[in-house]
Picture (cartoon, one colour):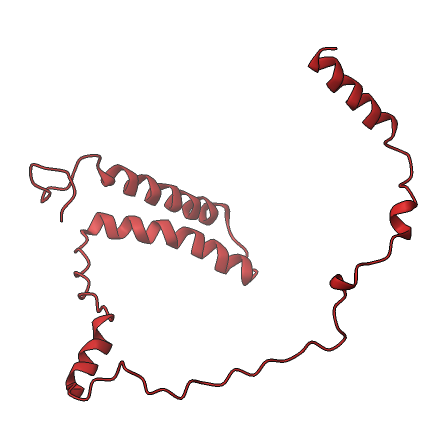
Length: 152
């Protein structure tokens, strides 16, 4: 017999016995006593050692403790100031957030909105988005120098 036919025969046996019930012989076997868990587990008490700690240095300066405590603390530098925006950029941001904000407030307050007000709010949102994308630029910043690599 070839190994393939042996494997096919084994699979046929597995499929044929799929719906058979398990044998009762395994259920009649007693549970091993070594597997039984006591009702109340035994408790162990661990006493601390009575030996003096050898880590303490009697000649250590207390000021060193403060330096070691501050050693892992990182305080980042203050962030740089925000760049100054020109008037068209400020207007684009106001239009981008102002149009939807007006629509939201008007809808929550149940104001009657004219068609021109709806059009103006939607046009302000779209115009602000387009203005910001167009002004974004696709080149490197002017102050990046000749190399665009990482700065260490």
